[in-house]
Length: 200
Image (cartoon, rainbow, N blue to C red):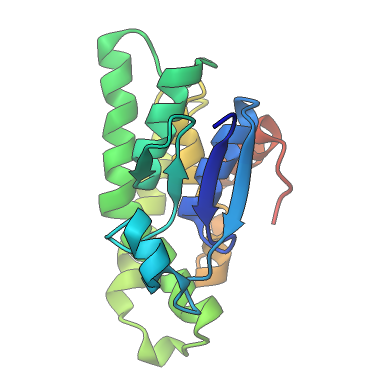
């Protein structure tokens, strides 16, 4: 196999972050669109590739199957360089820290509220108010970090920036106003320019 194959739903930030990393690292890949809303991750054919029934799913050049967006980002960064993972062990651990935080304290609130509000068209009255509260807390945490650092994990652009920008840049679709977080908003612009992706 001469190129990667990436299965993903283009509405998903988790999928887009894997795509952006491949693009940033100038790697050849084939994109296969898989609709989560239409149940295409639950077909027997897809479940044979990923029994968890989730996207993104990366098929490596050697034919291996790798799921979980941040695992994919780390694999690509460590395989192809690009400076996306620091060599220093503590700096690298700080990148991991933000990757773990993204999946535990950011994505479950901002991405989920966006999905319910923007794609399922749920009114605010039918959405758990804790999603808004905890999403705002996540953005506040990022605002504090970015008030004193150019990039989310410190002085260097990393996979942590790619991971966190995916749903942060779309937070307004979940009812979050980024104008209340100027450092976060400026960081989003910087990451979009670095990745050569258009602003939303």
